[in-house]
Amino acid sequence: MTVLEASPLNCQDTCICASDVITCSKKELAVIPSGLPKYIAMLDLTHNHLSRLRAEWTPAPLERLHTLLLSHNVMTFVSSEAFHLTPNLRHLDLSCNKLRVLDENAFSALENLEVLVLFKNAIVDIDRSAFDDMIHLQKLYLSYNLVTRFPIELVRDGEKLPELSLLDLSFNHIKSLPVPQLRLLPAWLTNRLYLHGNQLTCNCEVYGLFWYWQVRKLDSTVDFREQLQCYPPSQKRTVSINVFSLNESEFMNCSIVRESGMEAYLKDTVVLNCDSKQRDVNQIWMTPGNEIHKQYGEEETNSSISVLNNGSLQIRHIRLEDRGTYTCYAQGVALNETLYVTLNVFNVTRQVHPDTLNTAYTTLVGCVASVILVLIYLYLTPCRCWCRTGDRGQGEDRDSIRSSVLSATPNHETTSEKAALSRHVAFLEPPGDLRGQNGKLKPNGSQDAPGIKNRLLQPSSPQRKLSDPGSISSVFSDTPIVV
Image (cartoon, rainbow, N blue to C red):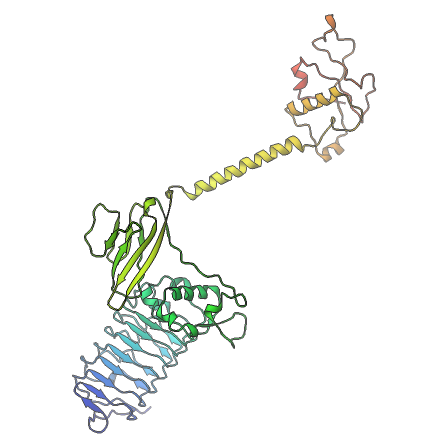
């Protein structure tokens, strides 16, 4: 491959040199002119035929250069070493080129860069380290590319790009979003997080995210409401529908998400956030009792409510009197906001362990089950002798009930036992007259049951004598006589 040599800078015919600003736009340049002065602050190379940006494009350091414009070229490659000699670059425009991949540490040398414009390329893959060490980057434009994955690492926790306030990912090929992580982002970032024009798959989670941003009146949602489209699942991606129509019955009938306040228990410590749409604002809080708490104000040593350095309101040792709606007035240079946070306090502490509740519940269930089993035993036990049809006397019924209830040995038996053992229980009548003097029963005697006296003992109808009421041994006897 033939390397084209750069022609010297010509401020008369090729470029326009105005003090520290040099523009060489629309000059059909294939390489960047050589001999750029060290005092240059802005270089415009737009609308040319530049295809690569290598490390040797400038042999001498350009420490004053803060703006480099390379849009509308045919750029397919940018070396990670191309910016080592431009450490103070703050604005870099690479839009409308043919970049496909952002390689490892592609822009890491630009520690002072504030604006990076990459829209209208063919970017498919972004290395996770492409933007490392860009601690001052504020605006990143990646719209009109072929990105299929949302680069959550760029905004998560604010560690990689701590000053990022605008991320444009509109009109890419993103189909799904990390909704739970996006809901945790501060409003000053999501206010300018542009996601319209993508190929999102319709679901109620996406609807809830954009509905919440709409309620907060975030610019990224309000300004591009009609372009927030999605495609119904399990259908061909031919016709899209608006995200905000997903709550209608003919689509997905998603329920409207309600803003929920914070919940706390007695003696807890909570922090209420003033989620403003702009950074570096001054917060003033008003409690439900109309007490004013200012940021950077005099600290009240005896107060349980204080404003932290980040503008959040901290409440220690919560009481029932602390519940209600708290108002935050966010005062900034661009606008003033009024935000509301509702705090609900439960009249209990967190001392009750969940295992305790589980144990109590288990005990209650066990007690109920025991009561039910006892009732089943008393009322649904299969009857033996006294419930059979036939000629029975009143005394026999009473005696059967007494022996069934008071006997220590259950008198019911299974069907298999009945089939295996064809036994019958009877109480033998002692011979002779057991009456003593004055017509009383003898201590060891018994009397005939009415209605069954002088009958023969039949196997199918066992006959028993009524026990002596004065003899407790016959009532509680555990050993019947088997015949």
